[in-house]
Image (tube, rainbow, N blue to C red; front, side, top):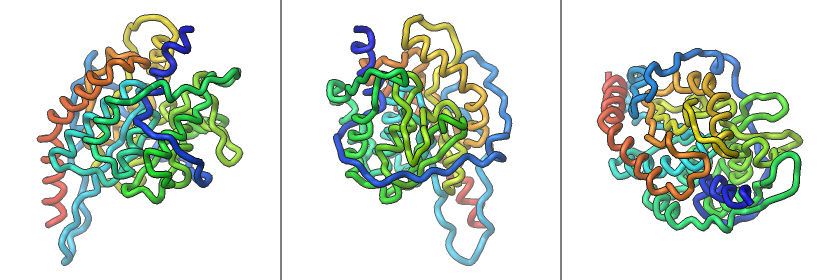
Length: 329
């Protein structure tokens, strides 16, 4: 009974509406070794700051006679189950401030929100749909030693939400990051069935069944790329705003989902540091006290996303202005 009570909440944290049909097979891009070998140090403080300037504004292209283009801004949306509602709050505030992302890379919960946003759904619509999400539509239990959720409803919901468009047809550039279950390598899906890519990106081992794509099995991207900054860079981003909603390894309550949350947090700390090293600004909504299945706390998670988004606006504007000034030289 515990599974049936808490699982819909875990699954629902990734889903923001819809029901859909199948699409074309996916293509994935393995992670290049060089990008994955850069090392970053972990934050020194027990509670990291909500907004971090990871590095100075990136260098602009060489000046030319043509007017400078605007910087390509990317959102790298991390995984964190129910904490993923915070992404909605961040997007909503950035949009209200006139900051539009050209590129979205998502892992796990971030891939769900990111895919829907990339389909042209506004931050305001994301917000409204998150509040009325009916979790009862999301259950697809199965008896299997590989996981007790199939994830087919997750795939269907995302596909309906994006208008049954494949990734390459979405209005904004989008990528979903997953982990190759057999090799342990990062895989970046930038074309094919959007819902299937998101399903693979969000397939927590032993909860969801591994997702088979072209004869290969994939699981949650958070194992190797908790916040997909490197993927965003590979897609041509000039400025990357990373949203880190991952739980840190601190003492937590016991139980199935408490232990799951803590285990994933410990496993991905090194990978998280590697990714965040490449960001321009890091946003950390204050959602660490929320567990993996705290679906009832969606309003709080969204609110925390909005708060950190507002805190970050002056920083983001300075980075964009600095980039633009360099482009005009």
